Length: 128
Ligand code: FES
Image (cartoon, rainbow, N blue to C red; front, side, top):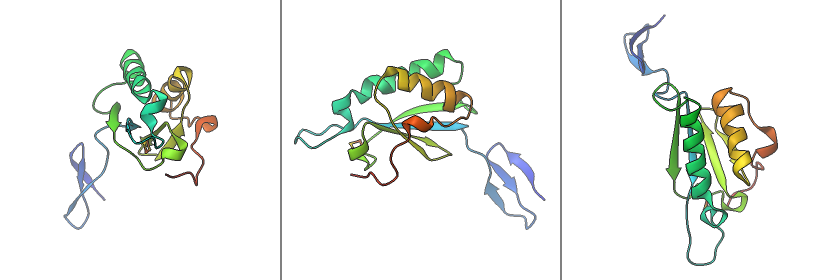
């Protein structure tokens, strides 16, 4: 049996505390990495615009903030061959998106309603 000491920790039956819930319900990271050596990178697919759109859509939907959704920039996530990519935690769901409507669908379906957008899932074995 546990009882709560804060939103993020609970005291276990042995008296120790352990993390319980995330500060955010969902956290999405967009790779915005840019390479100048000609190798593939997410920035070449306008990842920054997708990130900015996601932030705006999350805010407009009233989803932004503690206990809800956080949209963050990330460097290379080492899945460049599938880029542009974004990953949603805590589900650890990876998306390869193409355009603004894909971002809108991720926000509405996954970030708002918890439903994974199957058609945008990054192929499992695509890495760098
Ligand atoms: S450059 Fe985006 S995953 Fe590597």
